[in-house]
Length: 349
Image: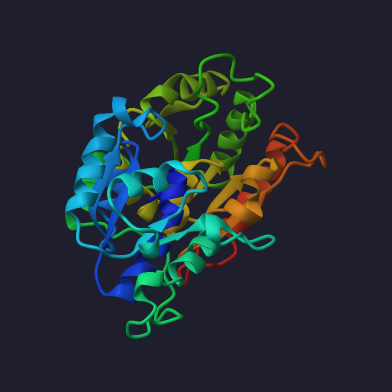
């Protein structure tokens, strides 16, 4: 059971793979959010999916919670792993007739100092429910280190290729830029004090211009959800002459297409947000700007790289709650240039 944003669900993938290794079968997942199904459909370790429309709504007013409880009552007894700190998942399990002897919960496994949340979840995956304590021993380590990479189909890659061909983007190196995030796109002024992940539009414009100067053959795609189109267009307006080399892609990027695009992209520059996690999982080298807020600190929540490096940039402002405003465009460009010229691929860039 895990109710998380896109990035949270990407970081759950290693745990699902670990549980599949331990028990020899895919996991049922109880979650929420429209991004979960298209992501987890591409994770063979994830089997049946139960999505709640709301986990905070009172039980008697939410049909999806009733349906989950009914499914739990019909489900054979088996291990249940709760990757949530609150009481609501345990309440739903109790209503569904799942006894505590079958449950392993993060509530009972405190995070170690400085422990990444994905590593914490993997430690949970090594716990064995009390109900199985007398059964044959389960492995206390993993035969293969589980990573966060989803598995794309040929149809996923074909869809992305067709879209790129339509946009005349099949040939040149593709540099992805992700300026928006959930907080930025909430109602109100993007520059409001509470939006620690805001980075000014003129900074993004300067970075895109610098990327084009350093890699003239490239095309820059401004990524995001449809609700982030206005932000992308405001960035374009800050550029003197973006031309056809800078493309707003916010209306076209379904989760499968985004994954396939990141798999083949040259690199990405992004704030800390869900697509930063998918890019790292898909092997796209990227620079990620992180705030210093303790609840989303880079050492606890950084994207997990698979086959390409991830460079984390922190604010130059030493304040413990510093946002992104003190990070300079020149700093981002330098980090990106060093990343993509470091020879991480055999063929280089």
